[in-house]
Length: 335
Length: 94
Image (cartoon, rainbow over all chains, first blue to last red; front, side, top):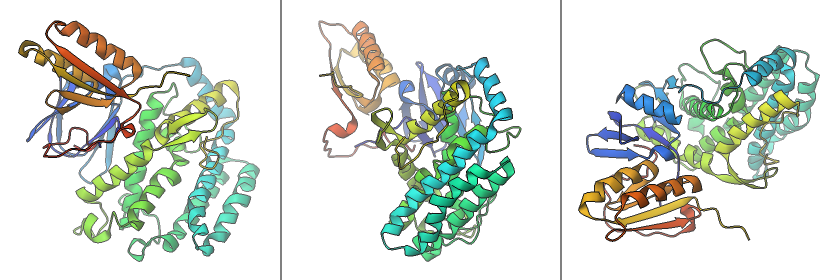
């Protein structure tokens, strides 16, 4: 049975154009119709020809397109003209950045710790008792440390330590071929780093799309420095979802041998890049996780993880405009 | 009791030759083309009304026949298929 998803990943070469107010992807073996009303995002991983006529239509209905280069590197996003604009919120968001940045960045760091704890606790319960120190540290110390910091630099140091110690635990839960010494980016230098980079990029782009559907300004971020030329708010909001979406997908794929070093990585590049089958397998697992639903405790209804990302955006708006405490998504509380 | 929230639909149509292309054009905006004259996919209740209205206008009510089946989600029915579909129109990876 087909899985329902409003996202399409295009891996073949072909032309993407508009016909009858809808999208058609024409490739060698025929036309592929994408329903315009049930599409939210497109990912382009190959050489694809687009026309401005299509872009016009996409802009009108607010479909976001992400482009990737030959080495899975993120090139950019076709970001339709903002439809949800709010000057009031933008001003308030900038003010919040100036005045109480820590009030938003702090909870994000605590959220990361909580979600990592949730993910790793599963392994602890199944006999990995070496994790205990780290888990205790996450549960007891991080929140205290995060509350005590005076500026953003100290907070970032804590965040760095959380991730560094998290990577250390990989040798306990992943097979040896996926062991990791150090997180290396741009470019990643071994299979596990490649998986993390690819997963993070996917999550990052997903978050851009979700933020697009809120009134938030993508360039004003709180934990990360609001740098030029990038949508840094998406880095902030995606952070707490990394353990539950990216890393759980990785653990699932690797431990259940859906992805192996020999079969799913490019040998020519020292196994530091996923090959096409690897990418597809990973994307499928990742999409499935995104569309999985859980019972949301505040909303009292089922909600998918993808929706949860947008809900975090709404929470941020509530905090900025109404001063409600910002508590990012937490796996344990399911809200 | 609230009415259930239908979010998934299957549409079959049997229409005169002249109007086939017309119906196809309308359906493909909303749903995925599953079989020759069958569309199905995720659809919001609002979009469903829109689709139904458009189709109503396009068909000739004396000769054409269109059926809509609505379910809560794609996991609320069981399905079996035999034979070869060629390209799968519902896959998330093209």
